[in-house]
Image 1 (cartoon, rainbow, N blue to C red):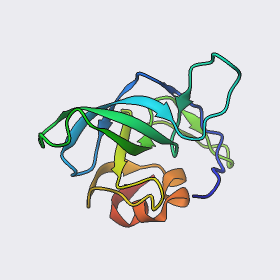
Image 2 (cartoon, rainbow, N blue to C red):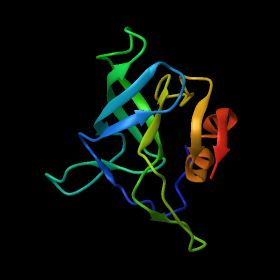
Image 3 (cartoon, rainbow, N blue to C red):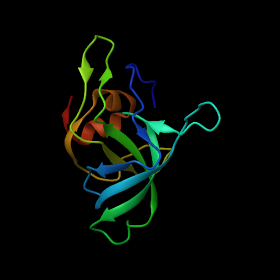
Length: 135
């Protein structure tokens, strides 16, 4: 994992529901915690594009995935953020993909539906290999 270069706004707090956009079988998930988040005491942790989060899977086609806890990477967010060249980027939905484990950061699915932010691909090259579109 590399550092993020853009000033990504952390717009997804704990408890936010996000879409899972890979073909792992999960459809919706709820953010439980954010990995590596540091803040003042009693502040609610939040995540942005490129952050690794712990999610509880709420809906899915595969029964074995539902009601489980997994790691995920945020690949899109509705709230706009600014890139170093001055460009502002925002997407139509909040979306994530599931990871196999935290150490390798390999995606669980083999295809990602929809666009993926460039900040995610710079930080996780394995995600870029299976992405259909990089914005």
